[in-house]
Length: 515
Image (tube, rainbow, N blue to C red; front, side, top):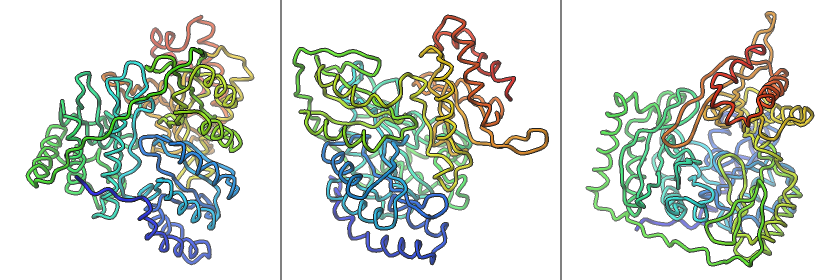
């Protein structure tokens, strides 16, 4: 069995972070040098260098009562004013000063929240289908395997550096919510209770779907594949060019998908030959709570596979929760037997294991979030905060939501959008029906802020498709474009999903006047 690292043991690394952070805020370390250092601790300076963000790992998107309570207490104790749920199922705290970021980072370790490796060239937060274990129709509960893989990957934080970050995901059904078929390493559940394994995929520049490197893998053997992935990346990853130092480039480095598969399996053979026992048998705790006869319904309420229990979805606009709502929700969750919070890759939060009456109370408590599918649109944190961001994706989303609300369009006239402030695709713009990516555009010879429009992406397993780039739209014209599109769809009498099925070029055609 592999060595499990006690989260509290990371405290021995914190003095170095405190010292370097103090030097940065005194102006003795430039922002690039600080970024190269602080990423290992899950923290970066925000744009302007006057505040910090802190990324709190939520392994497999699971926020236990203890972890949620710590965050709520930290918000109140340290006066945190801004947070964001991320597309890697973590929570970022923003606008922190030197004292706040150090204190919160240290205190988090006492409840098992680790920030180490949250940035930089390390294994990142392991992702998982958010409703794993409670979702109707799932193949099997993949959560325990995702959590065990995450524990194992923490052993590599202090190992030989990799070329760049390594993202691992586990999906429990063809919905492919954590994008397991195009992660650096993805474990995809099968109906027979085994995993197919995908590798060397990813979004951003030169996006690639993953290569299926193995089929019908027994769940207890997944760590052999995790170690093989690490070794493959170390052996074939590009250490010279950071722009190409991601696993997806290894498909070309190795000579194509089949050659990459052979390289991966070669490293797997090495792992097997080492003789280290990496088999696992994680505890799979069943949900023991039962319904009480009360019922609930609504577009944000999802019946669980446990009869009489429900999950409630809460999606703060842009993934940016009100601190007051978060703390009030924490108080409610603490008082509900068996309740738990899960963060999804689309910045939605699910509160699970609720009876009907409990679901009704949580519904009311979270009514400050998205009111329809369009308002659950995804956005990265944007250029107002991110050092490398090109455009303010959050401001764009807010402007679009306000314009669509004012136009009073039907709730099903527009789909969920995906917005990235730059080519890095932190907003996953390449997998949506409608996606935007920060860009520039010349209008009458003058450069203006703009976003490139992407259309017809899909992340469902077996139907994966990267979105097609259509062209650039000036930022201030995008809300009008969406209202125009929504009116076209509404006039058809069809919901967007049905309209696009019969008008596959419809979005691009509607955008022509704005590009």
